[in-house]
Amino acid sequence: MQLHQLRYILEVYRSGNHISAAAETLHTSQPGISKQIRQLELELGFDIFERTRNRIVGVTEAGREVIKIAETVISGIADIKKIRNDHADENGGKLIIATTHTFARYVLPRVVKAFMQKHPTVQVSLMQGKPTEVGDYVQAGHADIAVATDSMKTVLGLVRMPCLTITRSVVASKGHPILALKSITLQDIAAYPIIAHDNFRSGGWTILETFAQAGIKPKIQFSGVDSDVAKTYVELGLGIAILASIAVDPVHDGDLEARDVSNLFSSSTAYVFFRKSAYLSKFELDFMQMLSPALTRRKVLSAREDINARPAADGGAGA
Image (tube, rainbow, N blue to C red; front, side, top):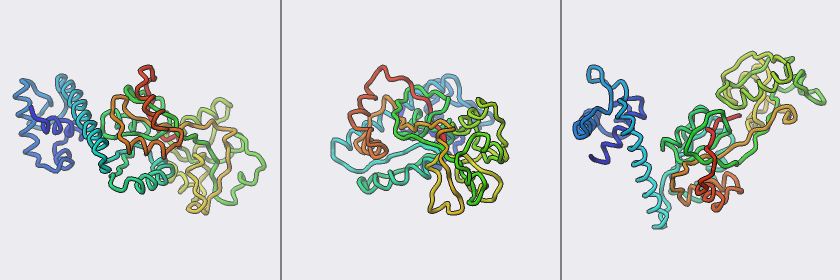
């Protein structure tokens, strides 16, 4: 059994059982991957993947167990390399951050800029996904940390630490009647068509729940969009939107205006997520503290070591 064979089966699995996609990611050939996987299966005495006419269509029950162990092995090797770099005072490395669109667009740019200025030899990558996916990316070892708000999905094996409070604003095109009101109520908002988030985002279901609890039925004109897309439709005059306050940029959103409605809609807490079992490198700890000064090295490491830390809920952009 060879280490590269474990990498091959993991990447094929992560690529949706597509050998061609795995070969492209690993910068190798499809026949080479197929050959190595077959050799490993022969050595083990059972199939890892299910096949139809020599095409991989799924994973066997035994194969799932192998993949779980392979993920642990590969993650462990990556952690050993982090330890080596830290103790050799090497500044290089790679930081993969799983997050959602709104955080990638409005929260992380200033943090990433400061981080890259301090760690110019570290390669930073963002993995954008749905709110219900980003925790899975970290759990599976695809990403080192995640930055997002809570959703209702629980992902075991992750530690979460609060880093930012997200408040909400009503966003409308300049001159819209709702902006002229001295104070805005839920009834005022419900009087106009609303461009809404999808329910994968905590902001989406939180806003709808607020209306429902008040016995008010809002006019959802258009839904299933992120903050930037919502603002585009607001600019067209198709409705108003209730967005994370951080998603409104006075410079770039010159045709829009926002009014704080944190008194109407509950705020969300953004968290940083990381694997409890993972080794945290010096630059990962630096990034977390740049994200929130409260995330000191001592607090983060204490949270990781706390065996009573409750499982993390997966993150999702409430924005």
